Amino acid sequence: MSNFLTVLSGVLLFVGAAAVFIGGVGILRMPDIFTRLHVVGITDTVGVASILLGLALIAGWSLVLIKLIIILALLMLLNPTASHALARAALHGAKKPWLANSK
View (cartoon, rainbow, N blue to C red):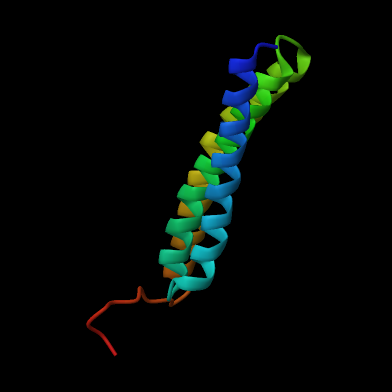
């Protein structure tokens, strides 16, 4: 593997780990379930996708690469769908969105 691919995969792994960490902090900082789902849905999708792309660069052309691509495709499809389903369930479960001007 060339030095460029090694550095690029390291950067992608770091960016992914940082995005997942920021999502974890966002869970603690946000006031209600809807904003928490928004933060986690976006940062987890971007973070894990970045990590999987970094791992794909490390794996090279192999069966592992195909598995990582399948996992990435499923993640990109299912993570936003799961976040949407959880938000709809919370809304139908009598959870009201937090509004800045309401007390």
